Length: 531
Image 1 (cartoon, rainbow, N blue to C red):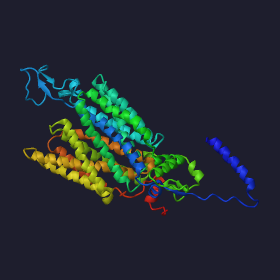
Image 2: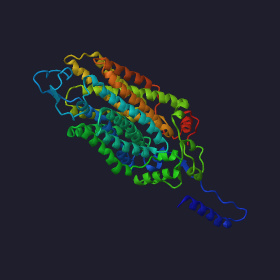
Image 3: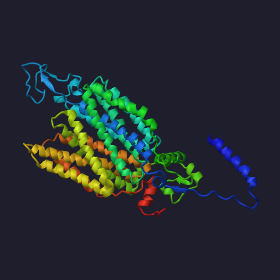
Image 4: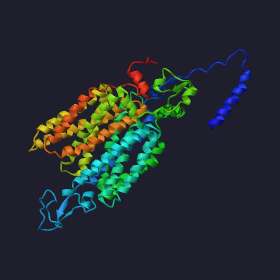
């Protein structure tokens, strides 16, 4: 019933009961509810990863495939297609590129509509424009990750932010297909990057926050299977739709389908409800989780923020408490989170340079492009599996250090190997093992970063880390053009330094996800007694 009617009803009920109280006797207070944090409620009453979490996790993580579509479509849309001679004179079929050939003596094998390079002549002196589009796309991702990271922590929420970015992706992706010229194309790719930057971020947090503490690590690691699957599916879509314009439409339609068929069945995060002061909504959702998992949530159990567990308010006060919010300013102000933010940003940047740099080197194998991308996506999956298996056995910190150094060592070996004869194969193997290790690190970092910060600033901190990763993605192509063994040397140094920085991060295995800055500070400082 409306709040005003409920209040009026409560007042009248009180008036009716008051004459029944005997003179000289006071009404007995209601028994105080047990107030526990979300992690404890999941562990004791609702289930850590039951049917409800499984359904919610799968549906939400499908958004990662959408991010793969919008990110990796540039590999096919901006490729330099094969060409052939159309005249006997003025064209050398053995030439490595069309630069220097007489105009009109050659043509693109797939026609001018096969890629943006063919349609707008982005070769020779204009070849830098292909790299410019890529750099600006990742620049847009960097901006979008920060903005949507903050919005999902504040009034929009996790689900609301995911809805907005999917709408923008669908619109900008389809509009890109109708770009009349190169600069319009650049602007639309920048805007697509802006919205794409928030997709994986919001999907990851929304998928993992309702999961219990002992299952959260494995669940978080599994989200990247959806990204790799999306890359594999995209190679098939690109194989069918050879025109870059139809490819952009085909890769954008899934975002519309996700909005209509998937999002209505996804729930908002109970942690976001709690920190925003919507305790009733959070409790309703927790009851739904318990029921779907075949569990029972007692009526006397009430959700509370971690900082309130030892100093709790009454039931009525909790229901009407004000929303708690945070920002990067709060992260920087507190010494514990300030150091963590610096380290996780630096490690994300270094990891991204290696991951995207090695991915670009795979494209230079001069084999079938569609098969190459598919194999690259499949090769990452064993790294995700192995890392997920070892995650809860060895912890986040040792695994992060190990995967970073594993990749760094093989990249350094690759820099020492020449590119002559059979040594080419050795260098290629070093590159494959390098990206294998870094794929595991990339997967692990999302979980690690999410567990290092409390709910009120988690997405803001993850957005900052994602921005650093996008900066690494922008930097990677400039490292690759160095040629020879220098890229491997740079990648090796990045992996090694990243492992050293990871030494200074705390272990988060089986530690609670804190809700507020004060709650984390108290627990990390040892100021709170056990509940």
